[in-house]
Length: 366
Image (cartoon, rainbow, N blue to C red):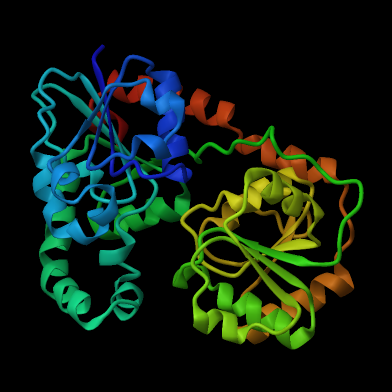
């Protein structure tokens, strides 16, 4: 069976690229199609495949691909996928908009419908300059129409969480199977001794609400370590002397902090959220806002606790409740829970489900 893997862009190794890596294991002879590719920023496993890029690679490349969103539909539709029997698109952007060949089965593994034109559009629009804001206002309606229209080109959706499946239903009026994404857990270990600080980790963007953690820990006088790029001057101004910004760190430093923190603070709404599972694989609990993918990965009172008020006060109350009420859990308990989301589990579930979908009509499965 001739297989094509379609990925929105390949400019780093984050969650979507880890999904692609696992699919490369399942389909070692598959060809990869992507809008732009930085070969130095991707893994050897992905580089081993034949990679076809779009015309955006030549006119803007990896430096300016985000500015070319209005051109992405044209770039995706320019790919010739004739002859491929199975097409798997990995979607957190417009990847599903390819035109499949006659007789092909197109399965979309959806990490998220495009946040910047749907539920997070107001936040993204407010975060850019006047010119970009005007361009977004002009192009967003047509991109939404194209996004909905191209959902009909997908035979089967697989969502990375039940939360994303509900968003697929809301925006595309399509049902979706759920397979949680792969988490590379073996590199994480529990520490013999825990230090007295909380942790935030991951790329810092407005919807992750890192500002709530910074202000809450500043007001409470609790030590907070923030790992990840994107800390703005405004965010740094919120921070008191107990808050430390490390910026991007190497893997060894990240692994160290995951296992030595008192707990991970997770105040945003994520489609799924891999960092909490990596922290649990390191034997540490999570304090999370009770919405989004966190509800599918964290067990209240066993691997962490939730708070319902997404505000500085709500997180402060949760931290104080954690310190007063949390009964220490053996690291092995948190690690055992995290192993249910390991890469091997993902590959086994995907292989089984894709086999069923390829051999069944959409009417029989959906």
